[in-house]
Image (cartoon, rainbow, N blue to C red; front, side, top):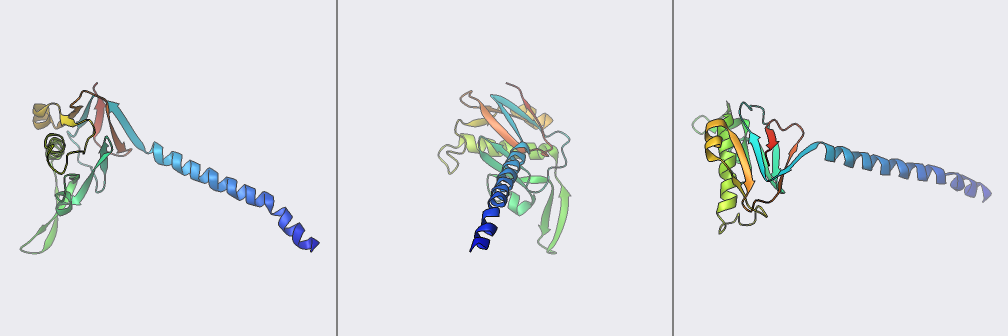
Length: 176
């Protein structure tokens, strides 16, 4: 009986140490996960798509908590308002049933993203009504069409945020 108490009595420091290691590991994992994202906050924010040709499959952008995801598969990219094409996309030739890879244009990515933002902001009677809490809109259509720069602003002139993964290749600048 004294042998059993002796064995179990010595394991308490090991249990405490193991618990401490688990808690420390989880804390470090949570800290690393948060530092991998970039956050931009302002009233006017610009996403510059000019020359960008490396948006990969499953890259994403979050605007006020609404996530937009890029997909290589064009059928998937056109599936809903929150899906966007990647820089290179796959499409299927219906005649031959073969898949082809095609580069997408940087301006076309910016324009399509701007169209999605406008649809989510202006069509208040549709299924997208509550997409953005404060309403986000494209600030400068001419700049978007001529330079591939997507400037976003809050309809109510309030602060909003954009979050991206660290490796998202689009240059983002807070202008206001």
